[in-house]
Image (cartoon, rainbow, N blue to C red; front, side):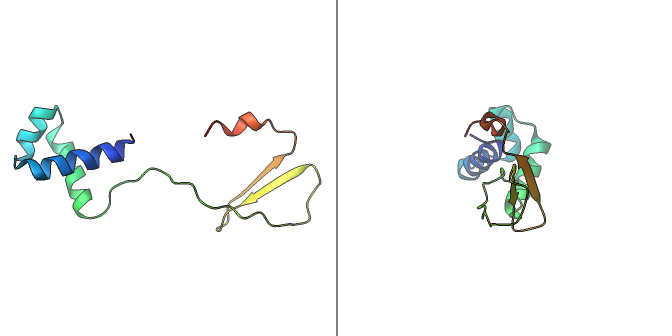
Length: 92
């Protein structure tokens, strides 16, 4: 479970508990000021979310035969040699 998901669960549990924020925080060992910030961001729709996977389109472009080039929809480019280990990207 991500930390933003845990925050959302705490906020929703507090909302249905009928408890004050201070009482909920005492019962769950949470810092009241931190919890208040979470609740404020949640109300404002600014809950920080974990990074998500984005679609990647591979287009044919002239380039050296020994590299692969990945571009996102913006200006980001990742150019890698074909000799790079598949373990470099980590596990999914």
